[in-house]
Image 1 (cartoon, rainbow, N blue to C red):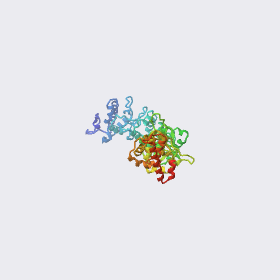
Image 2 (image 1 turned 135 degrees about the vertical axis):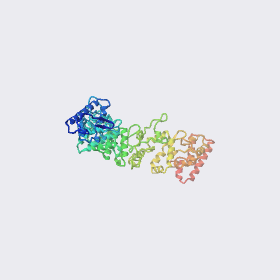
Image 3 (image 1 turned 180 degrees about the vertical axis):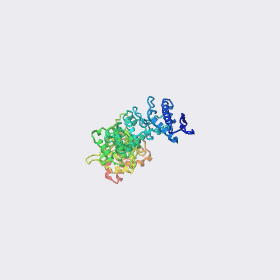
Image 4 (image 1 turned 90 degrees about the vertical axis):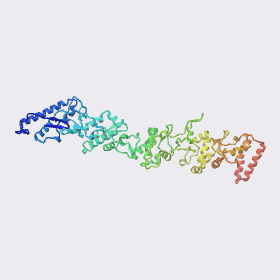
Length: 581
């Protein structure tokens, strides 16, 4: 008889009792039955010897009969069943560790299912060294399929539980969860655990609840039983700040869809937006703001911003939220100015180093640079970008503010004053300030602000600006250094700087007159060859600040005549005469 699979075959030859025609053996012969038993024993003995051979120990299975090739004769079919029973009671298989000092019976090991292996075919869960169960990987898939006919079964969920528990208690478990996570591996493991969870109601659920399956953001690994309430680290995909005292799952783990399904089964909850916002605000209302620093405050604000479409910041919360300035000091921008640093052309840049030699730092608060690094994406359904949000919701400023208190939050008893930042700029960069103010004044919105603030306008008019001679005069007492005005003064004065012309960074051209006229008249700055200019030239001569280019008498008489003409032609003689006096 020949038997086997693939190309592995063997012949059975013995002195059987045959029928008279010698065409077949006598199935009922005690001799033949005994020979059949002896053949089975001999085969088993051969297998035991094969198990110690370098190659045959993993390939001998190819010589055993298979179901697909079972003999038709009952006598030989019984031989196959007899051989199967004999093989099952002998240690003839290697475990996955391929240890050479021990063989295992067929039913002492098992084959891994597709759910129990990783993408490379390796076990998801390590075997137990002292209680090995996984069959060696050296057996080919076809040979394993043959062994399944001889009693090799798949590894059951019950056998996986102690191995899974041992893996979660091993010191390498934390590293698998946190360091260089393999998300495919974690997905497969989560699906395997969920398969056990759902196998039968409550059969394995309590066992799994006791295992260390929850990786927390704190790098602690907990079980459902020992951890109390555990939350997902995000709401609507927005990461919750990690300094609120909540036990939360590691964000990378929660982002894995399969792991997230497992955590839901284990009882991990999604926090309510209102709960998290209240926890954030509690921090900001505590003494010393709950010990938060710049990074924590920034993370809080990023969270609140991204949650705006789902949980708008309450009005009473806005004033309580603490920011940190560029020197890491706490600030509340709704109560005090906090500035963006602005671009290189902005006046705010003048408030930051480097400063001219001898000029002290005015110590104006600017938003800490970290707030504008790695800006959060704009949430769906929300109109404001991150910087728009800071500007419109928390009133961070991108322009230097002129007055110490915003009109909308000024108390009735408060008096409007100029800010330290404006006083600093006018002291050290007055030319830049007046030029920038003139540029801004052209915008209707800016003009309207001045129109609605007569007190502020007066304060600005009386602010001292640097003039060409280095002296400082109230803005309303100065003149725009237009070429025509300089020439007019130069025609009678040896020193045109004796007239308080503003000191600007750039020389003006005749064509600039139209741009300056509206702004100059609004704030009382001289911009025309008129009574104000004549009086200024006369003052320069009388007070000895400048000599004349011709006879003093002639120049003075000429100026008096012009002043007299202006008075006579004025529509408001009382105001004109008051100027002259």
